[in-house]
Amino acid sequence: MQPIRRDFMTMIGAAAAAGMLPRLSRTQARTDIYDIGRSGNVRLLHMTDTHGQTTPVHFREPSVNIGMGEAAGRPPHLVGGAFLSHFGIPAGSALAHATTYLDFQEAAHRYGRMGGYAHLASLIARFRTEAGPGNTLLLDGGDTWQGSWTAHSTQGTGMVSLQNLLGVDAMTSHFEMTYGEETFRRNLNGFNGTFLAQNVFLNDEAAFNGAEAFDADSGRVFQPYIIKEAGGRRIAVIGQCFPYQPIAHPRRFVEDWTFGIRETDLQKVVDKVRGTERADAVVLLSHNGMDVDLKLASRVRGIDLILGGHTHDALPQPTVVTNPGGKTLVSNGGSNGKFLGVVDLDVGPGKVNGFSYHLVPVFSNLLPADPAMSARVAALRKPDEAMLDEKLTSAGELLYRRGNVAGTMDQILCDAMMQELDVPIALTPGFRWGPSTLPGDAVTMEMVYAHTAITYPDVYVQEMTGDAIRTVLEDVGDNLFNPDPYVQQGGDMVRLGGLDYACTPGAVMGKRISDLTLADGTALEAGKTYKVAGWASVNLPQGKRPVWDVVATYLRRKGEIKPGRPGRVKLKGVDGNPGYAA
Image 1 (cartoon, rainbow, N blue to C red):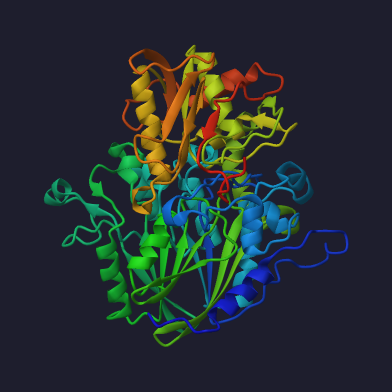
Image 2: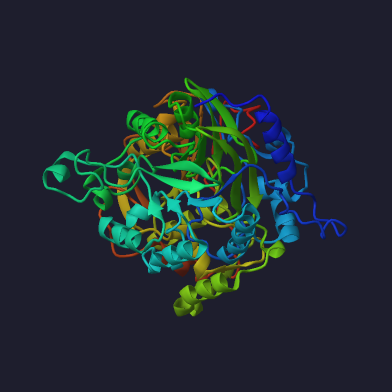
């Protein structure tokens, strides 16, 4: 890759400034905040991690997003005021609301819901038209087919139909594969774009038995890249799906496949598209997560741009990473349909001369709803509309999920399991998807599904020793806080009901978790056995009752819902960390 020109950072700064949205006062309401300008000859549109949210939602960004090692104090590990200061975003602005937790409830009422495929479709159409025919590629970073009842009940096919209506050119994946290989391949057959994943190979047994693969000689299961003509240039898009699939989810979904980051294989693909394929620009469509992408960009030469997902980080400006071949731009596109990444490239023969980047918030009350997409979303929802609209209770306080150690909606899930299953301790995964509910708003069945709709949802009750519980917390803590990004798998800390603990993120494995106490204040005893409820187990066999049924039963008895006594987590050694707001 050629070194980026001196005016590169000036262009990035100008693009970021242009993308900062003003406070929508009465006098400014007439300003078209989507008039972001146009530069270069190629436009890339990037969406990722919509998690099946077909209609507009509220989604609170984290107040705790702690980075360790080299990631400490740098994007994406900034929250609140530190985030605004770093990116030069005015406090109280629309972009401040879209990208931080600050004044979330008041700002949510002021700016309204975000996302929704009908509004996203209108925005995509506008940006395509501005770029001119044949100059735009629409790329989907994955986690699209999961996270709602619409996605789950159709086994992903409903979301594929929405992707086709948007005109997605290429995608990669994560949760899409948890439908199992047969359903996953059937959905891909209905997808009009190209599925890309350079980092999935057949295991030895599957290869010996002649399992289906894109390239039987190498054992690569899927097409690794495409070359697309845009703006008169050859654009290579390489796919990088979630590299820890059989670790983070039940192995049975992908039992014939092996995964990984696969730096060496990726470098070979980059070298090929730069060489024999004569690509003028190379883009990695990634579901690694931001920290992994930053490390990858420092070690693999020849990639111009990484369009990242998985960790749901909404970053108004990309990070420029130096590597042995030059520089690589690394971005991450947020989640839940809140944003559309717009990258204008000045692509010359064999090199990218400059970039202009905007992370554009999708404010549903500022964008028209595309009629065809609205009709399709309504049709998908129609068969279950009455069930989805059932009001179970109302929110007594803000219910949200995203954050390194705790979320009020996760506490509701724990409360439901403890009461309905009659156990003193409950665990729920630190998933980063799931919309927020404002105080006073209805908690519907649709909202419950939006926090629980996975293909292995059943609850369980098992006996665990205090030492085993602590080991679980240590293991998840190492996944989240290990200073080596390649050890991290995404997600936040497991949430707890009926149990408190202290966590020292900067400690080593086995030393992060301490001071475990039950709700009554007594210490958790290492050798004592406790009844523990949970769901979404990777290893335990599925039971007979999905977690959404447990939660709905619990909520129907509540006139208004607030989390019970929350599991308290004391973080140690994080004072002054810009990724931590007490």
